[in-house]
Length: 333
Image (tube, rainbow, N blue to C red; front, side, top):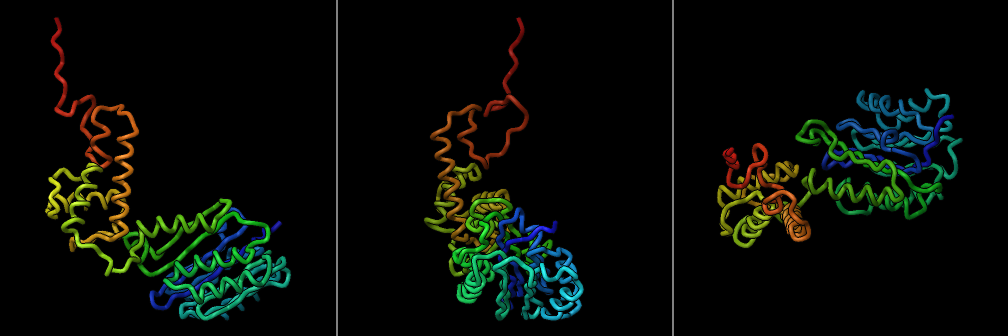
């Protein structure tokens, strides 16, 4: 029996940032492994209901050839004898969008196409789900990530999948925007099984945004000097990265300690060379220092000197050595 994805999704294009994305929620395990497809400079696709997963790769190939969204939908649907049980949403390289809902998709099933996006869903509480998604995407401030997540939340508020919730995913592509520029997956996160997958997806995105993305306003950057420098030095010292004096003067020792902290905590996207710090990183650094203080206060030491060194303290070489060096062997009698 072909699985039916009781699903609501949105495909979208943001021309200003040259981004394409898909957001989806379903009462179907690991829906992010099946519904969303996207390629930078090409377009995005959602294939669902009695999903034909080959529509993902085939659709992207047709988009890459230069076919627009409507023609891609027409070709994929015409070639599939099971088309009446399937659903599809497509947005192309220029932002033109199109969708298809087969006549045998389980009620309620339908779609709404707008400028630069298409919303589609099946086994829903009603048409208000896709309509609410469309309105939320159109009216929400922020970038494509904010708007796609808002669309999912709006769809759920209107009833969502009438069988309930289970999984959600967010995929956004942008040329060279993946980790260290290695691919085009700017955002690629999933919740495979959770009682509140959209809320969990948003929580994961907040963490992902903090560490992996750089969406903050450059005007918010804090110069590392004075009280800010003193606070950064203090927190880096608590965490074992900084061993200099707490002077509030940003010196090479502080810079080196801060650079190592960023590297070990995966903040490559937040590194800068102008002695400034993002507010989000400053808040994260302070939070980690507060956690470390609480750990030292509430945890009894097992290894000598372990609690006072912090997680950034360099590992000791060898085993069984004291902080002042290796113990001398006792002379035998």
